[in-house]
Length: 284
Length: 288
Image 1 (cartoon, one colour):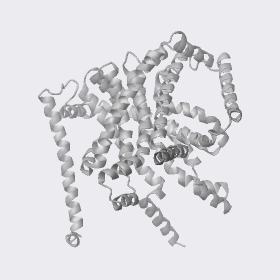
Image 2 (spheres, one colour):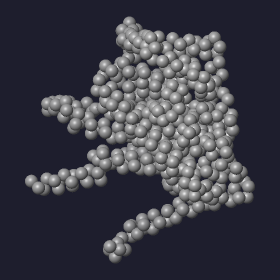
Image 3 (cartoon, helix red, strand yellow):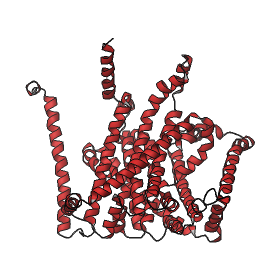
Image 4 (spheres, one colour):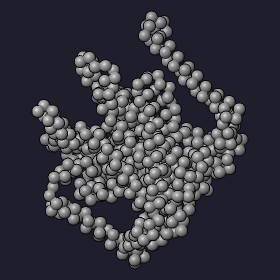
């Protein structure tokens, strides 16, 4: 393989360029880290407030391996996020579909949706905690509320914004309502809905953090808050970088799921499914 | 809002008042009906008033907060200022970085990983740290608002600037336009709708940032007021305060919508028509 490609200057150039760019990325990153480290070593950055990378790594080691305190809290937070997201997005998607298919409901719900959209929904957190008491119930309620909205709006807009011309074509060919739903509405709506779910999952993580900031019994949010209050900034940053990793995994996971479910929106997925179907047809 | 409100908005504007009243009457009827059910449910103890207070109690505390005592104005102003200042700082940084990224490919390449890193971290997680850095005053609220509203504005401005209409660019080039002219006359105008969409998202998240920072640690602001009321189990006042946050959100959103309408006038039929009429009149005057 390498033999045949050595004569292709464009390709080798590209590989070379890629390596050069990756190297430059690494150089920039390590320069940042090294200057940060030296800055806090020579006292330009107060280590009490701006911990050095080495101390963050050190406390990450402590909370992950030596003391292993983070696992319990990680489990608590992720459990909350999962439950709240599931409940909120099912509720949001369901309601969005009902409202989307029913124009009367839509007209009467509009003013309330506008008001609800302008309210910072996380702001309801103290109210919910006062109403439902301390414990998981109020935390899950907060997460539900926070991640209800994006699936609701996106399902609604996905269902409502059907291409009129296509709809006319479907109707003129006497497609049944079920056929219109399955072949026209859903294929257009599902990618939009998936985008809503993605927003909701990110929002769920934020919602869980706010809920844990307010009631600090367990979870990553309470860990960050308590570490910061004790001015143990290195550990707080270790937790925040944990959240970065979780956020990245959520982002990538949802992207993967999006490609799987809404396969007709990307070429690779389309090719995959069509080869699978072709193989199935071969039997006949 | 964009989805639900855009449908009938255009026809609504030309309807006479009498017809408009008949259109709005069922909405009011439904609203009043819901309020009555709610009130009755609380009065008959179907809903515990300590969890969900009666609408009359909420109205009473709105009157108290806004008119008899007027305590809300001070906190309202503080939160409003925090959100707007934070938004301004965050948006300024985002726009500077986005424009530099759009103009220089290497800059974009090497800044992108950090922008993505900042995006996947829930910004709210930084609340305690930012409070430790910037203190208990308004500074920390402004900082959190700026951090939270940075990313949507950055991404939208960048995508707006990057998207290119090859045909139009060819036309510009064939007419001998300089690069700077292509940027100001073609790329900038076509980026504006995306930019405003980003600003609208950014405003909402900036408000969230200000309020969440106030929940965590503050002395003034709507968030503090609400936290205080709900810890006293004074739910009516708490909900009244929540409604004032909605009011802030609505004011901010519609200001931005108005600016959007004025600046990106060519996206809306009615505005485009009026602007082109104005231009035509000005042209005629000049010709005479």
